[in-house]
Length: 306
Image (cartoon, rainbow, N blue to C red; front, side, top):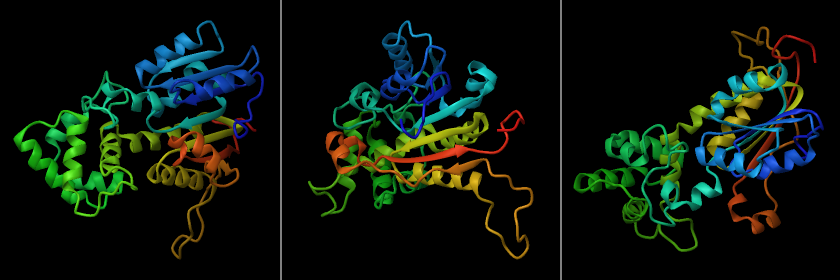
């Protein structure tokens, strides 16, 4: 909240809404003429927003993916700009806790994993058709899984016998594929990285993040803040690279010693922020959180001066 620096009558974007923890804090700092646009691609989150903040005209819930930030802000924000943007990435706690959504193997449920269950293909459908080499790539790239090939072979063998339709069914396949000694009680569950990788693939999360960051910079008012909370290294790397690309010219080389016409649009604010031990103790799911902050500089998207 300190990084966002909310002003009384400003316009703000919360993407994604989740269950409104950040939205509630922003609204506490907003005046009667302020605006908070709350995006979420999960229909359940939008229903919750409309119920929890019923009657608060300052909040505008919008059902869409955060890759559509540009169109959404241009439609709802005055002048097509917002003062600050918060991107809170990944899956929300209610999604993890609802076995029917299929994000977690802690409770058995259908292997779905879609952020928006009304569109796209569930994880079970994707697993039924994905080629072995592509599954290895996804597990390595998105899950940073050391035993990607062993797991992929186990999945292909298991699905040849029966469809993989349930979360615990997949978790057990992954666990059995692990070499002796790789499964220990003091480590994360062996299926954790596999579930992360498949979820990212099913929802095209990294492609959506690239689009969201580009769009966010385009609709952020000069002096406005971009605050991004990510929960794994792949997301954080993309955020870090996007801020660097918008704030510094690309490295020079002998053929092109300087970047012609480069104009910075962002300025990094501070360094990477992680939760304290006390925060992680209160909320174990915050352990892997990483936050980066940048400020919009230069001309506005419409061409005016800051």
